[in-house]
Structure formats: C-alpha cells, structure tokens
Length: 220
Image (tube, rainbow, N blue to C red; front, side, top):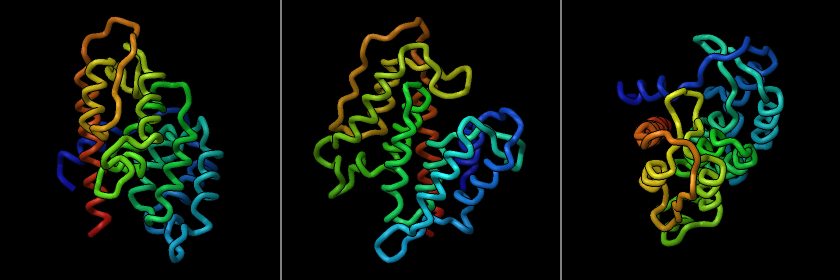
C-alpha cells in the first residue's frame, strides 16, 4: 500500500470516542476479521454466516465504541460495511450493500458515508460494461445521491471532523467526479454561510484511493 493511501487511511479514521464495549469489540472482530471473514461464497450463494454475523455486530455496536489497536473508536456501521465489501466474496457484496443502505438516517454523515460506499464499491452505481449505471443512472444509485442533498445542507458536518462542512456547490462537483455521469447531482437551496468546501473533493478522492488500493491488494 502506498504512503499516500496509508495517510488517507489515517485521515479517514474514526475519532476515538467513549470507552470500548467488550461485546461490541467481540462482535466486530468476528465480522470484520480478514483471516476468518464469514462473508465467503458457498458455491454461487453467500455463506449463511455472513448476514447474521453482520447483523449481530450492528446490533451490539449501535452507539458504542470498539477496542482497536490504537484505542477505542466509535463504531460506524456504513464504514465497516465498506471494508467488508472489499474483502467479501462476490455473492455477499450486494447483500452487505443493501444492509448498509438501511443504515442511512436523516443525518448528513450517514447519507454522505453511504454515497461514498455506493459510488466506489456499490453495484447500482457500477458504470462498467454491463453495470446498472453504464448508460443510465440506476434508481438505487440515484437514491443514494439524492439522500445526500436531502439530508446535507450548507454548513452541516458530513464527517466527525470539525473542518468537514458540506457545501452544495462543491459537493455536487466532487460527487459527480466519483459517481456515474448519467445521474443527477442537483443541489437544492441550502442554509448556512460556510465557504466552498474543497475538503469534500479531497476527502472523496482520498476515500477512492484507499478503497481501490485495498481492492487491488485483495485481488492479488
């Protein structure tokens, strides 16, 4: 992995929060652990252990922190799903994405996190030959994009970093660079007075680099 990708990983890391919960830590480890990942294919179907293991982690970690190598971190279900999709076998990827879609709430953070997942790793936003958004925008992909503009107004935080404030104009440009060209990236009237946030474009680019680097490593 390149130095730039490592720096991206550090930048995108979740901020430490409350004390780690033992049950959450155990459930997350069971689900995410790369060496014993339960989301493997059983023939052409996803292994029966995949989704129940994911659901257990989401249930036990809701609103809690897990113990990581550098201390406790707040559990973020959509972010964890993105990592799982990278390492899961193909029959499981769509199931994980659909589960992550249910985690989108009315918060700007969750909407932006899921768009990042959908645009980089998702099935509906896939623009490759034969992909759902190759020649037109798949409705589920458009749904992920629209959710950002529905839930993120100018000045809203789209991550836990204090400098990451959403701006509808720069956000639309950055998202269009990452998502399918056939989709609509219309920004409605926002609120607040923050200036154009170039950090959105930088963060999206950084997330793309990190996820594509991870995908390349897995495919070796």
